[in-house]
Image (cartoon, rainbow, N blue to C red; front, side, top):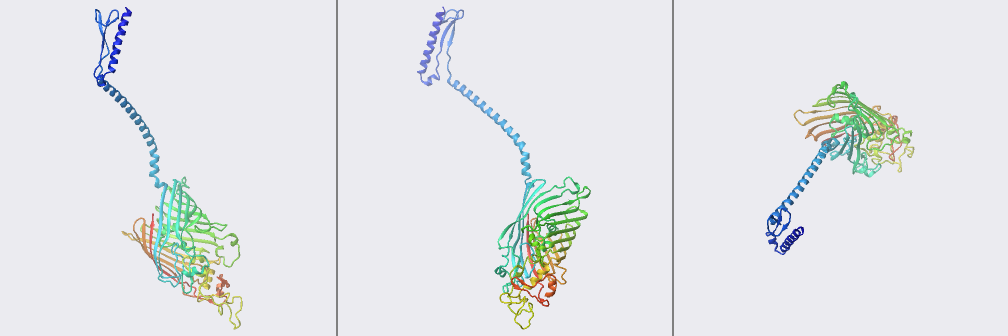
Length: 595
């Protein structure tokens, strides 16, 4: 029996297979629409399969109709489902990645935003520009009115010039709240030529005699030099409430007095403050401490100090000495100051140092000590400041603090810079020997090989007197100054002025170099960065014209002999004439840009 239904099953399968082969031979379109089926009958009791119906047999259909469109739809649905699942999975994975990235960015943002928002607390760039136009109604020998300004000597009235006297770029870096680094290069105009260059001396002065010259700093090109390079620790006394705000600085730095006084005056772009005009630079290389003193834990400043140790050179000269100088300033505000300079203030300044001279030169005995002598400067100030005005009185005292180079830093006789002025005399100079009718002989005789100065046609003998007055190692400087300003209410205008009376050496009974300087003007504050000023600047030597006998001049250091290759007057009774220099009067138009 089993073999019969097996045979029937094989027959049915063969029939099914034959249908499939037949379908393969059909057209494709027919396959998509037609499908054959095979029906067999199964005995429910025995499970036998028959090819024909019979008693107890039930039909069993093998195969089913094929719907191609439905299959294609199912395939497409399955594919879409898989794609959608893949897209959904990718979107979910991307969402998780975005969330993780957002968390990381959020964690980074505070530091990044803090760095950007505090950029101005890390770096600061500023600049300072001083420019002017000046016109001289009268010219003479004098110190510089401003840095890098020079003018011709006597006989050059109506001289005028456009100038850039100062250009700074201030770069500040604050790596932390406690430290500050300042770097300030300065572009400046170099003036002059090498000492002893007669052609240079004749280029800028009286063209008839070639007798005027000026202080030299080389070749006239624009130069770049270091003004400030300062590393400053700002919280020196942060744990001491009384001294909180103090700092310590190293490098090329503003000394404790001149920059402070420039801020007190407020018109540095117009003219120099007293000791800066005379000899003291605003910048030295060294180390210093400065800061306020506040009593009782309040915010009022009662004392303000600054002191340090520095090279004897300044920021634009080379240090040569084996000693150092000290400076100290102390300002007292008896009633306290809520802002800098407020109210009544008393200030004292002291400076002690030596000339910038190498040790081997320092020990050479000489009548004219020049820069070998010690240098001392003292200033005592009484000042009162309010928002609309301030007024300052100052007393100055010095020893050997004003030499020939300071006196003629703006303009001076060529003899002061190594070039003899005028035409030399080869015979019959009354100042050099006694005339006896015999041939000219003697230690200081004139000759064609060694000519004598013409006292009335040159500045040689006069310059030798100035050198003895200013560089004998025993000079004492005395000065009195007044300066201040007044801001006109409800305007951008202010009035300002300065008066300086100075005796370069009060140990000389009558010093031809005693002078008075006064500056007066009006300023206009265009905006917070730009100011303009128009002012009159004047230097007057207040003695009437006079001369000094050689014998008296010898008592304070005048030494007859050869000076710049010519003989100086030597007879004690001979009076060297015309010792009082010409006055200088000028009108300035100044501009300041400070950012």
